[in-house]
Image 1 (tube, rainbow, N blue to C red):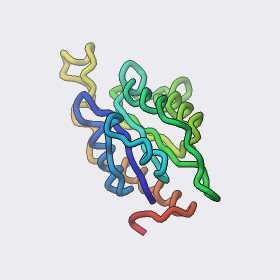
Image 2: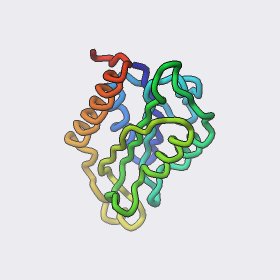
Image 3: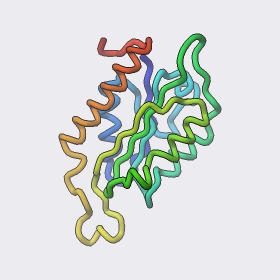
Image 4: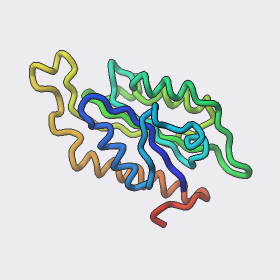
Length: 170
């Protein structure tokens, strides 16, 4: 199985830690949008897209990269290219009302990806109102968050392997 993770991690490196933990499981390369090779993204069996949350949205560099992607097509006789979206944030999603991942997921679906799942966890947030207090969630992502990210990636890999792609750990 060929996997790549496109990640924007700008404040404290938290999103990159989560991306690296997922990449370890999927044997994926982690790249920034500027480092990403469009051909590699289009040929991967599964692609992760993640960033921290800024003012309720994923980073504009990530969404801009996805907007710039040409549409992807399924390999001959295969299923649509898989994708997943992940985020780190100081505040929880209000999933019934708003999802951090939903706008990017919809954009990816419009590009021909099959968004298989989303993942989010808390992370250090030093946005202006929280900065004088030293931030929210000072010790996140923690070991449990990283373990959850690894389990999430493992499940995605197992599903993809069951769909015909060879999992790197199989």
